Amino acid sequence: MEDRVDLQRFQDALGYRFRDPLLLNRCLTHVSCGGGMEAHNETLEFLGDAVLGLVISDMLMRRFPDKSEGDLSRMRASLVNRKVLAEKARAVDVGAMLRMGKGEERTGGRRKESILSAALEALLGGIYREAGYDAVKPVVERHFAADLDYTGLGLDDYKTRLQEVSQRLYRVPPTYRLVRETGPSHDKCFETEIRVDGHLVGQGEGRSKKQSEQEAARRALEMLLQGQQQ
Image 1 (cartoon, rainbow, N blue to C red):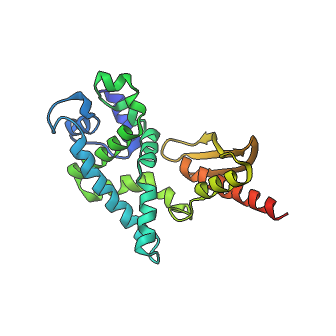
Image 2: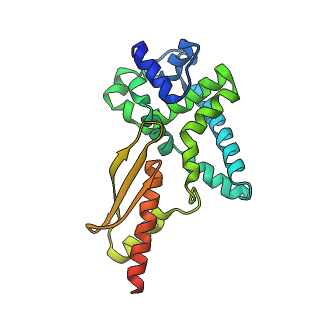
Image 3: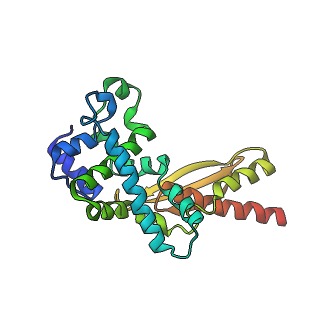
């Protein structure tokens, strides 16, 4: 484990301080370290997945009371997939805090989406186990509330549509590049640009990389489709 100062900084970024250091240690221990079920974070990941789904569902229903069950399900899926969770984990530097076996360490385990997303879920499961729903809910809100501001959440996949249009018009896929990242770890702003066949076709900003990519794709679609109509 990292030293006490690093752990405190990490927990401050996460938004929760564990009372039980052994529980925190378990949340951050990958199964590659060995030991029994109480030694690593797999079962806490299982719990955290359920807790995260519940909190996100509650947030979505309160924010979008007129949406159908199908829309809410798609919106939730767009928020809690492995890529998004790994992104949230990187924002608070979960990778640096993990304990893992030497083999996993050598193969870049600290950067793997599967391990990072699982560790974040384990941390949420650990918070719930130690302090209950009222403690884990504000942590989830801290890291996911800004994503609910994205109006196309789970409903308009501009990246997929841009891929289709780009292939049809230019026979090449669009390329995405993160050009700027500003703000503190818990309140970042990302800017992405998109090029098709070497030409800049769209730029977008968002509170997550996914949001900035979707916004850039939306603007790129507008530009390409308007060009077709001229």
